[in-house]
Structures are given as C-alpha cells and as structure tokens.
Amino acid sequence: MDNLYQILENTSAEYSKKEALIFGQIRITYGETKEATDRLARGLSELGLGAGDHIALMLPNIPQFIMSYFAILKIGAAVVPVSIFCKSREIHQQLEDSEAKGIIYWEGFRSEVRQAVSGLDACDKRIVLSEKAEPGEVRLSYLMERYDPLERTVEVPPDDTALIVYTGKTTDRPRGAELTHHNILSDMDACCEFLKLHSEDGALGVFPLYHPMGHTLIMGSFFRVGARIVLLPKFDAENILKTIENEKPTYFIGVPSMISEILKVDKKEAYDIRSLKYCLTGGDALTQETMDAFESTYKVPILEGYELKEASPMVSFNSPTQERKAGSIGLPLPGIEMKIVDENGHEVKPGRVGEIVIQGPNVMKGYYRQPEASKEVLKDGWLWTGDLALLQEDGFGFIVVRKKDMIVKSGFNVYPKEVETFLKGHPTVKEAVVLGVPDPVLGEEVHACVVLKDGEKTTPEEIINYSKTQLATYKCPSVVHFVDFLPKGVTGRVLRDKVRQSIVENKEK
Image (cartoon, rainbow, N blue to C red):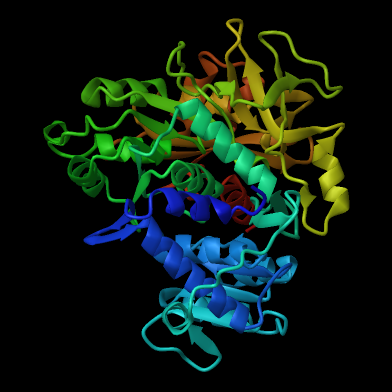
C-alpha cells in the first residue's frame, strides 16, 4: 500500500455494509463512505485539482471531513489540515506557505476564509459546505452529487507528501511538517498493533480531526481495521457520557482537560461507560489526582501518550500491562526508538534532564520549503523534539518543558512545570503557568500567572512566600499575576507565547 486512500478502499471492500461513521441520527456504512469519497474525488479532478497539488481542509468533526480527506489523497494531492479556530491571518499564512491550490471549508468559516484568500491568486478553488454558494465558491455537496465515482486511484511513491501539518508558531514564518504516506501509515499500524484494534472496536471522535491525533489515531487507525467512529462536532462533558452509554464505543480519545471536565458532571456515576476498554490521552500531562479520580469512578484505565506533529504524531504510550504514572511519556510504539539525551546526544543518567529524540518511519521528511529549519531538528537520523524530560531512577520519563520555554535565570535552569506543580499545591490556586520574562540583569526573571479557585482570595506576596518555603530561591516567581483564565490550545496546553506576550506588553506600558 502506497497511497493512504487505499485504507478506505481495502476496508470498504471487506466491510462494505458495516457502519463506519455515526453522526447523530446519521449512520453511514463503509461502502457509502467510499462512494461519496470517490464522487468528490471526481469533482475535485473536474475542477482541475490533481497529483502534486496541496488542498487545505477546514471542517469540523463531521463525515464530510473524512470524505474530503480521502478524496484529496485519492487524486494524488496532499491535505493541509487547518484548525477550525484559526483566524484569517493564520489561515492566509498557512495557505501561502503551503502553496495551496484550494480550500474546503464550512460556511461558518466563510468570512475568515474570504479574507484569508485575498491576494492569493494560486488558491483559487473555494469549496464550501453550504446549501448556497456565493460568488467564487463551489458547493461541496454539488461535487459529491454531480459526478460519478472516480475509479482510478493515483499511484504515489511512499515518500510522497500526504499532509502538511502546521506546528505551533515559534518563528515569524509558520512551519509545515511534511508527513509522507509512509510516515502516517506506519504510525497508524503502530497504534493498531499496540492497542490490538479490530473491526468490532469503536472510537468516540470528539477530539478535532484536523489535529494529527484526530486524523491518524482516531480516523486512520480505526478505519484501518474496519472499526466505527462516533463523531461529535464539539465537546460537552455530559453529552460525552450519554453518547458512550448509548453508542458503546470501546475507546475515548481526548486530552487531560476533557477528563477533568467529565469528572465535574453532576451524577456522573449514573452513566454506564463500561463499553470502554481504555481512555487515551495526549497533548498535555495528566495529573495523578485526575487519573485516580477517573479510574476509581468509572473503572476505565487511562493510557497517557506522547505525541508530536513532526512524528505523525504518536510516539509512545503508557502500557496497560505495566506500571503507569500520570505525566509519564510511556514507552515508544512498535518500530519507534526514543531516547533522552544531553546537548551532545549522549543519553542522560537517571535524575537528569535531557531532550527527547526519536527515530522511526513515522518521522517527517522535513518542514516544507524550509531546509535550514529541517536541519535544526533532523540530525543523523534522529528527530530532536525540543521537549525536555526528566529521567527518573525507575526509568520513567516526564516532560518538564519545551526547550524554548526553559527559563535561564542568572545562569540557572528553571523548569516551569516543576514550579507550576508546586504552586498548584497552594489551597487557593486552581491553575498556574510559569514563564521567563526578559530581564536586563538576570537574563530572565520568573513570572507566574495564577487562576484562583472560585471564591478564593490571596495576594502575590503570599504566593511568593509559599514558593520560598520549599523551592530554591532562583526558582521562585518574583512576580505573580492573577488572571481569570489561561488561553489554551485544542490539546489543552496553555498557550505560553500568548501569556508571555500579554505580560511583556503590560510591563512596557
């Protein structure tokens, strides 16, 4: 198998009458999914799109996302998944950088897309999911209904680009990780092997499909074995429990913040979710308290994983048959090697912090049209992730910070997560994020942004004095900012760059 589209082709041949997608009251079989996909593929071809083109995809968790994804691949083009939360400027940057020839989107994003394509003459195919097209648009439903299914699947080399996935912005120019058909297929197969997935399994698909965890772990791995996917376009904790009880999927895939919200549901114990074999989480670290509370309430184990967009994205999971520790990156998936090394590439000893490096068929071929940026992270066959992790005496690794977020104060390294974990132990603190802010004398100073629990009050001085009781002085925040909330991305991670920017801007006023 070379073209990822063949996943759908092979599975639909074996399970044509079997339910593939459940969306509310809508039930779609594998055969119906393939036919709609093939009709859309023909429609895209008739628009002049084809092999080697890049087509952006900006849809929520609905069946048309999956059909569009596979239709793009069938014609030999590459998918550029765009977050449904992106604004016009971000969309424009990704379309421009990826040299996209077109974009498929929902009508609710129409105004942002219209602004985004302004000035991009090459991106002249706008395909909208709407009952009515506006000037310059073609309806997605029209393409699916107008044309007969496209029979021929474009053959592609396994190292041909299947997706261009944009990573968190750390530079002025966005970085698009080029993931090949082989990259993604190998990661899907590793997930299938690790989880022992089969056709009777089912996934609850509420995690965004545009994110690699969505389109590789949920959509790809479960489609690979002929399992079903229950799609939900938005997260609602109580509705999640109701859906699991009614549809009985065997896996829930999400992020730690989703697990925390589910635990807040009134009368949560009344819901029967025993169909679940496991809950899979990634994107951010899970706390031991949250893991213990969920598992004691629902008797469903949580397997925490480590993912990275440049790695297609799943790298490792905690094993269901071995000891698990909340916050641990777990063990690498089959076929993937992972080490924690110092700046010279030598593996660190227990008790030391180093950078996670990985090697395997899932590692991207590079950043699109950015050879120098690619060389920074791809060295001697290893992907340097930029994630710093602490290797414990028992062999468990725990991410402490992104390398770019490490604070260097007066020559001392401060790992934000260590300080954040301590601050969250204060009885008034609900959430905390610790950042380095430029300082002319110290290099960087430690600032903490704190969200208090409902009804609680305290002072910056009390938080600072509390930290001094058990932390080295250089690790203690010198400034504490109280905020109503912390901005977060889709995986639940705090958007540190936004928090840092806000602090710097207020400091300059």
